[in-house]
Length: 547
Image 1 (cartoon, rainbow, N blue to C red):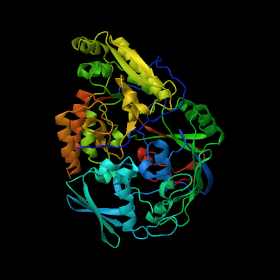
Image 2 (image 1 turned 90 degrees about the horizontal axis):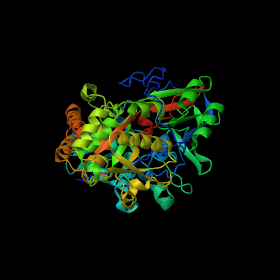
Image 3 (image 1 turned 90 degrees about the vertical axis):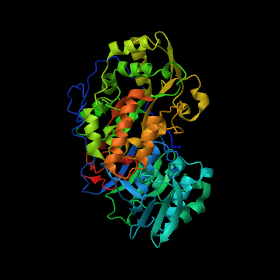
Image 4 (image 1 turned 60 degrees about the horizontal axis):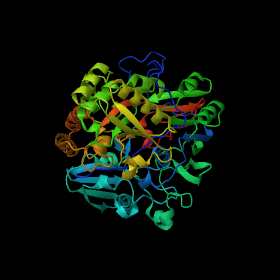
């Protein structure tokens, strides 16, 4: 079985950070308390108070300019942020990670049949109603290999998609697939207007062709220098017109520029990842409000070569034990991250929460233990051997975590060599096998397509997974994942994934570094944005407005 999706890379500014400071920082509640052995998870917000007053133009910062507005090519944080602002999917991920109706409601008359009924009154910005033909066309584009989209393989259990009523579409499956609804609440399930997309052809989703969706904000213009401009839709089918009149999604890659913009009012908001100036922004209470919400991404060390020294599981375990995660939390994330207990971020527990939470809380925190790490390296016969790490000095969080691994390796008798590339070329480690030649591992901040630990795990633990670069293959893990995909009961499905997490902790095909929270910054006087990681998949600004 093959399961794949796009690779994700979270790139930040080009300021190198040091990890030599003491391991202390703010908690997830930003109380300026010292981070202890267990990072607190209390105080995270999924939503912010809804706006109550009209608001003019909002400049919303993303770490680089948007590349495409076509959902089949939604590759990374900027694209997802812009598309989810304006477009809607068949199902929707609520701020707490639960799946709820979106453009359609779903029923399961049998384990291999998903029936979608389009919501009454659902319509595109041009006033045309959403029809089964639009749904079939949108999903068909995702599945069309000739278009080269990123989501085709997530539909690999689909046998047919047909109209079965005036406002009804049925997906027939080759075998049960309880991962697919989550994908249909993400970019894979975004519905676009067939007639408009066919008219625009290859220009669809570009500055020349624009887009046609159904959301509370509608596309106005896109100039790569200015950004993507969306305006409140006065005829939104789903309810009231948003109070914020206009939102400009603009690439602001430089940390200094972004910080200054938030403090002076040139930038009104943004979701911030690993930003070095977070303490400065938190202190500026008269200008900016900082929220932390549940995250779904994991800062991780991707093992890309099992033929070298990392092919020995004891070496991978030793590196994990030697890593100073507290320093990463304190100095890269400025307290806005959690110490991991297993690979997946707790924010991914979108179902079976009691099962996941009980197991997660019972798992030990990944504490540093240099003595045990040195012992494992000796047992592996790896003392003095070299690990080559792919990195970039131009991406601050990547450079900083690379430094942490250099320190960890040196402390336990390993050597490191860096294969450092430009920020622009770092993505090649994910997409080009030639770029990975001779590289044993590289860094990432990675996420799945919806709130399920399996969404990201499937990409690197399953044979053929889109990020399984080292051909990792554990039959027990594969069997459990396959069982989970076909298990209807949420708690039973969660219990299977818990077993996967436990095995992944032992095998470490990727090493989890820390679990980032979702950091949201908004100007004083602006409120209503989603506080959780669901901003990546679902409309996050519908309640935005003045406070």
